[in-house]
Image (cartoon, rainbow, N blue to C red; front, side, top):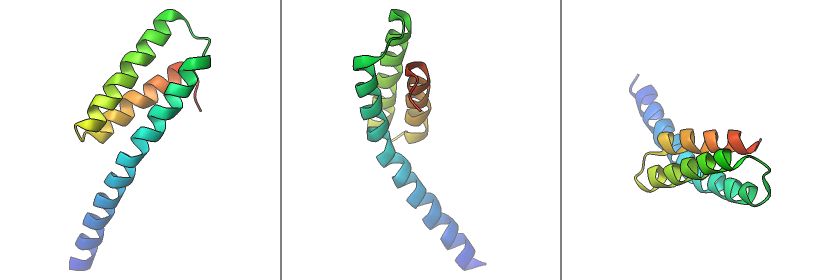
Length: 80
């Protein structure tokens, strides 16, 4: 039973680190898409706002919130 609890903690810590390291990858995809995207000015403004929020959350260590904002920006820009 104790080994299951230890495994769960290790898994949670490991997945958090993996999650944190994917934020910059998503921000890079967004930055690249912004240069060629054909979305409206309002959509572009929203994507930029969400990308900035994602960056701020990432720097604050709030990676779930970061990914939520970044995924919304990717959706606006049509990133798959």
